[in-house]
Image 1 (cartoon, helix red, strand yellow):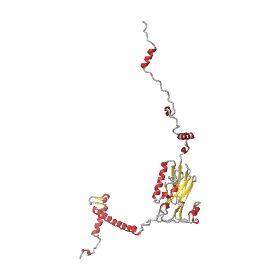
Image 2 (cartoon, rainbow, N blue to C red):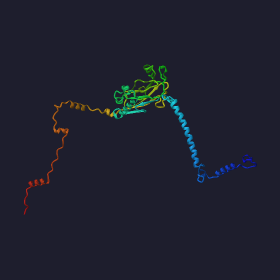
Image 3 (cartoon, rainbow, N blue to C red):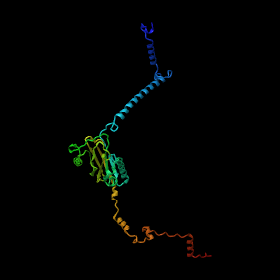
Image 4 (cartoon, helix red, strand yellow):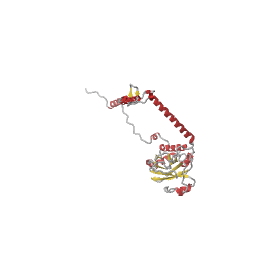
Length: 347
């Protein structure tokens, strides 16, 4: 009868089970340093170098295959299923940005071209990027060729940022306007309506009240494909006070563009402008006598001008008299000899 068919009798353990328990007991009795690295068995954490190579290679191949499969299906989803002309991720309403400085304060000296020219250059660069002949479009705001920053009529440009797929929902009648709109917007809607427009309002919150003018008007032409100058409104402050900081608040009005007063650019923009003028330069006017003299010099003909003498070239200043010439010692001795004749001494 074969041994594998034999049924053991009595209380004993099988050889394999006994060997396993004996191996476990031996490993349990090993010190911790032997468990980490056993130089006799050539093992690291209980595995030989060949065992580590096999297990690391297995997981590298496994995860590489998983990554390739995932990348394959993502590529098909992004390139074949989603339309490349439509946004892949939906965003919220568009924000607002401002030029020349997208910051909360604009301060400059109007008589210092070193401060005005960089502002004008920044505006020119922004308008050239619109690729819509924007400089000519807003030419009415650039009468002094410096966008009003040397004539106390500075212009700022408020841009409605682009969000692909955003369709504005506008206020087209006066009854649609919310209660919190500033006074005067209903009159603006009556004047420029009823075509769909995103309205913009600007008001002074602190400081003197300059006149605020919008170019081409206080609105953005509302459409899904707003491009170029359709996304920009120029705001000009006429008769801007000097040496006084004026705070402005501009808001856009549309049904699906909420106004968040806590965050700059979310439906509203707040900024301050400070036109600085050196008062000492304003008071430094030349006296009337100097102006009259200068004018008379210019109008005198060349033929009637008096002859200029050499002594007049010194500007009318009298030079001090020349110092007396010192005599030499020899001349002084000769003079003394002539004054007192020599006599013989008494014998």
